[in-house]
Length: 140
Image (cartoon, rainbow, N blue to C red):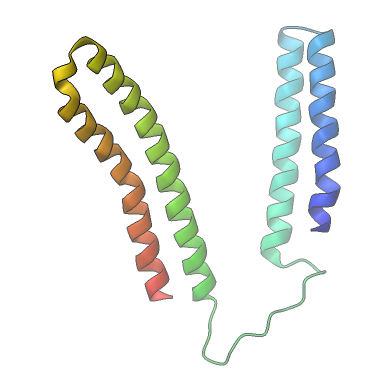
């Protein structure tokens, strides 16, 4: 929590500085400032991730039951990644197929059934991620 309290003002200051520089200097200079700010924010996010995953000095070591191992947390993280990745992929797929389906329906309304099947297949990607997550959680 303390890390968020430190990084949030830094993010706000960097965003404000990029905005001021983009108003003052247009074109390539503003783009370079924005890319530089993004790299600084990426480095900070990676540092926070490393601290969070390594446990940090401020966190107490959790006491695990006698029969427990670290595979439970790995399975949960894998399940979260599967659901997040599949949901993002499904959102992108539905965006493109939905836009194309609406364009096709505006020209030929009789294609409604086919268009909805294709959009439904794109939504199925999220269900695959959910199934993988359930399988991973079941093994944990």
